[in-house]
Length: 133
Image 1 (cartoon, rainbow, N blue to C red):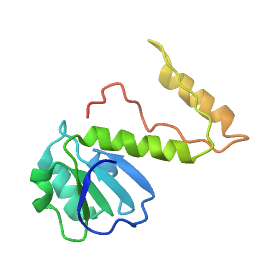
Image 2 (cartoon, rainbow, N blue to C red; image 1 turned 90 degrees about the vertical axis):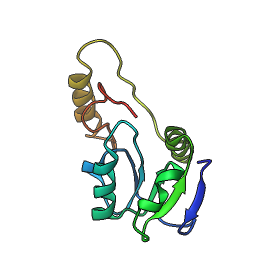
Image 3 (tube, rainbow, N blue to C red; image 1 turned 180 degrees about the horizontal axis):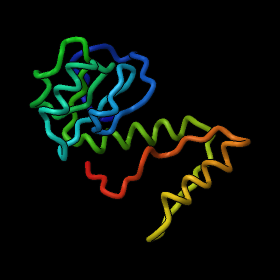
Image 4 (cartoon, helix red, strand yellow; image 1 turned 135 degrees about the vertical axis):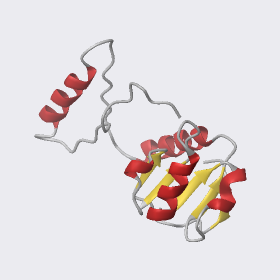
């Protein structure tokens, strides 16, 4: 991801990544700091749930519980997208992108409903209409 592992081991098993959403934080995840969310809320969730690892700016590293592996990065969004690209290249997947100015959420639900009858499907939770990193 281009960051620096400052605490923990490099071989932890991570099942998913959390892109700055403390509400959805789980122990088996790697958490990516979000500057658009309250650091106090993020820190409270990190202390309560204790994910496998966290990717955060260097100046916040000392605040995390010792059980959490810490990767510092000057551009956390870049680290997230590098991980996503690495993971994408490892998987034999097909991607469906739904774009437009209206009806995306409904269309996404319909496509998911149809495809999951014969395929394994992963889709975005909710929508990203107001997403800011």
